[in-house]
Length: 484
Ligand code: C2O
Ligand code: CU
Image 1 (cartoon, rainbow, N blue to C red):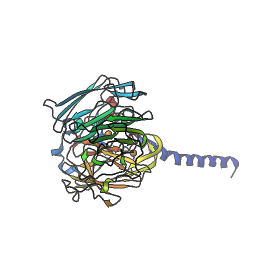
Image 2 (spheres, protein in one colour):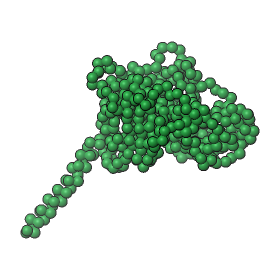
Image 3 (tube, protein in one colour):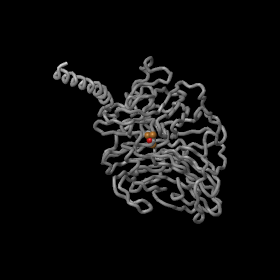
Image 4 (cartoon, helix red, strand yellow):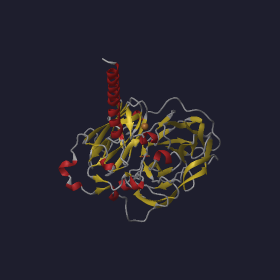
């Protein structure tokens, strides 16, 4: 071949190779783009979990709008509070300055306390959170329109705006509220607070754990704090993990019982001297009689603790053992039969290289699909639902389903034998598989995501949807809704 022809040929080959690489890459890039605005009810693809699809009986399901699934519209609230969100510099209880978000001037925000049966009304005002904000009632199975998810159940409340939430407190227990608009930033910055549905008792201690700018705190206080509780008091320590990572907690100085998990009472709890692994977003209630020398709640290491007792209790680290809820406590009726499910879903968490919204990286996948092409888990009201959550992504994920409590059936094929393990926030470690079951008894469109909130914003997020549900809200769009 003459020199010139050879060079021309060589260039063509090079161009061909370049195109062979770029065209598919370009395709992957373009198809990964998340639209600037989308309807969360039409996201991804429908997964009917082996149950009937809506096609046959569309007519009776028309018009079930998220916006209509409200709490009681009439009635005088038993609990009536106004919560004002601000973007500001503020001081933690222990004095450090944080530039973030407050609720009524503090973080954690004020405790909301209600009794079972109370009508709760919260007027939420956004004074200065520029991305907008909402309040989500983490773990409380409120009606869908009260769930506080921007772009799904409401529009983000803009600066100067307000939103009224109304729901009946039906489940006693420990919960928390937090913004569900740009939540990976706003929760981290302080836009959250505790909720307790139960009357106050003399031995009640609330411990909201959060890391502000790398400063680890209990109730906004770094280091070792103390609450005065007379010896002999039955203390109930309500621990709330508002961070993004699992945390070993426990009482040091006396054996204790794990009396409630994610707001639900444990059946037949026995005393342990161990640590409890509290998932991000999860809650646990620890009970003990305060010993004469006091006791101490330890969060992670003894450098962060809360002394509980008549005087400063001794320090000490958590035991190496960890409570395993799979066989803790004694069985009790579930109230439904998970062996006869109407739907069975897989929620397989993986990770793969590719593009997410045009950005190259290693991204989370659900059943092999990347956000937003993820499965939409479709149910009908009254269905018994089983879900197998497995994880081969290389990291651990605290999985949170909104609006429902699920019971754990098994872990890695080993059946649960203890108390019914009801949960709304379940840590699924790498290479672990959990089978859970729940009754679809709360119609609407519900987030089902990782509560390591940056993971949710990186696509580890999907929905549970009742057939026929529609939503007038959009993610993105003019209200700039961005739930994660
Ligand atoms: Cu604690 Cu989807 O939230
Ligand atoms: Cu995660």
